[in-house]
Image 1 (cartoon, rainbow over the protein chains, first blue to last red):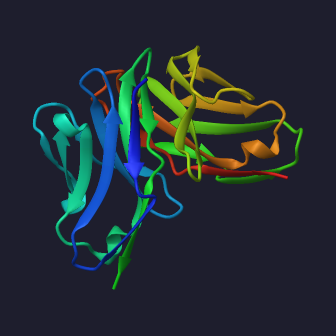
Image 2 (image 1 turned 180 degrees about the horizontal axis):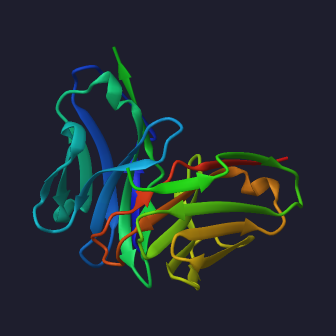
Length: 114
Length: 114
């Protein structure tokens, strides 16, 4: 079964520091991977997605992720953290069935320290 | 923002009572999903629909049923609510079953079973 693992349920960074949120996938076929962000009391918003067109994917709000097949990883990064980046981040993999089923990681809560 | 409305947004109910949550979309997307979000578990798929009257189970479907009589509405019913069903429920929609297709999420319904 396809799944994703997010290492670190809580990550704290200083404002202006690099953000690195880790995601590893388990898949026997080329995966379709997504990063979503959830702000408090809101739904999930798509940050970016990997569709095999390019290994480095750029998303919204300055985030990007690199697909590394050899490491089965899809880590999310941002060069300089802003206070507004504080949120919960979810990595997900999609599986095509009769619908497009998403399997989510357990999430990483990002705290940005001023 | 995708046109997804969940109702109610908050509900407190007693153990053993039936509860129905509604998801309404204005995007005319074929696929609709119900997820629950719990700390330490991320989001888990309950049920999904791939067309009017076409539904299937997700990974945590026990105790839940769904119905979809119109493209725009997807109902989630807890026949007899239990405390373990206290959670935040999210509806999502997607345009196609292709695994590259992202899902759009509603704002969530916070359900408390006492």
